[in-house]
Image 1 (tube, rainbow, N blue to C red):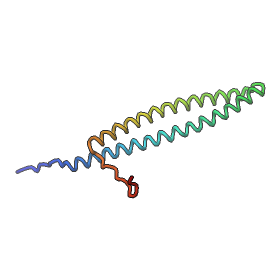
Image 2 (cartoon, rainbow, N blue to C red):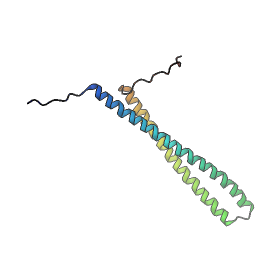
Image 3 (spheres, helix red, strand yellow):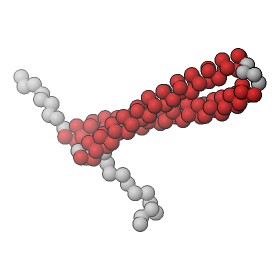
Image 4 (cartoon, helix red, strand yellow):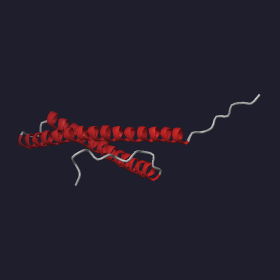
Length: 125
């Protein structure tokens, strides 16, 4: 007999697209937070090592250039360079995620995929 034709529902398509872009934007927000947290942690460690290295260098210069201290200063210098390299890589990733988020936000706004944000009660100007 007749086969049942499934007709696309515009409302269902809109709902599917809206959910998909909400998920995308949420994922990009999570990535941004993760990247920033990692970068912040590395920055704090790098600053602590820099302070420790400065004191070690001062001690090294005033104590007849101890070999063990020289080795430790070299290790701290390498660590700071590695932290700096990683922080730069994380910043590039943060920038990329920001651009992706801006593009996705513009796309969703242009295609009316997300509901307009509602103003909280009592915050009218």
